Amino acid sequence: MVDTASRAGPVVVTHALGRYPVYVEAGVLSRLEALLAEHLGATGAARVAMIADANVLALLQSGRLGRGPWSGAALTFPPGEPSKTREQWARLTDALLEQGYGRDSGIVALGGGVAGDLAGFVAATYMRGLPYVQVPTSLLAMLDASVGGKTGVDTPQGKNLIGAFHPPAAVLADPRALVTLPERDYRGGMAEAVKHGVIADAEYFTWMEREAGALLRRDETALTRLVRRSVEIKADVVSGDEREAGRRAILNAGHTVAHALEQAMAYGLPHGEAVALGLVAESALAETLGVAPAGLGARVAGLLGRLGLPVRLAEPIPADRLVRAMARDKKNREARVQFALPNGLGSMDQGDGWTRQVPEPVILQALESIAAPAR
Image (cartoon, rainbow, N blue to C red; front, side):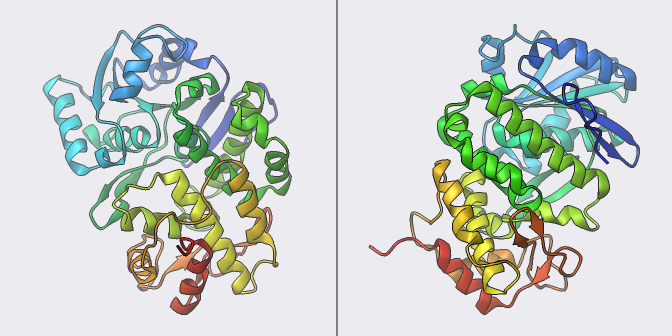
């Protein structure tokens, strides 16, 4: 389980081979080199390479992330989901090979969720596995994507279909880095926090309702609490189910619809906005099935709307196209679409292994809850 005895210290995540700390601390990036020496040095890493989103590395080198420039080796990739591919993975691993990195090396993943997934997959596969440290700089990555050890790349057939479980040696989440985040990206990260409230903590959800204004202003105290509580929730889930054999499936709440939306829109819809829409649709689905009480979807949509996130599509998308995309979701069993559904605020339906098969007509009905307004 999760060690939260000291609220001032890091959250500790356990896994099959050990444990790692998640530092949620304003200003922690100023201690980057010392923490890398502590956590990568302990693994025997003699050389360290940073793999970074090109835009984020430029912010780091200019001092805009609250510390001096990185003086070590760095490899970059173009920002955005289109870089999360096997081609970029091959380019980065080839560069490491050309520069002579061996098994006594370590990786630093700097950037948002794409950086963590891509650099983490490089670390998972290079020389059959290198230690790495996650340094998330987007809200979505800090409170969700950097924790849990999932790494991977996308394919034309869907998101994250090629990948590996590879826990980091440590995660460094500095809320001060979020001042550089574009407004749309910042708000998108809130969707994952709302998801955490829906799946595990009604009190946390209520706190977000109360503190929405402070969160939108990027108040440092509110942000630090937000990131830490989300990390605690996710860490508790993944520590008990590292390989998604059971309860970890609840972290996919909203994501069956979200991934279908992203694929149908050729990844032009930001992930956080897709998750917001997915939470609305899947809450409606849970109500339709009688799994969740009436009114849950309205409350979820209300908080998402207050946080500046979409609760309806801006443009129509054929529902049958979304259902076809869902058919390729990696959670499916026997070619049947699976959903992780809430049965109330802060709790999830255990269903059949924490997911539930849903007939296509019911899915189509639920998708009406996010349909674009008639013009």
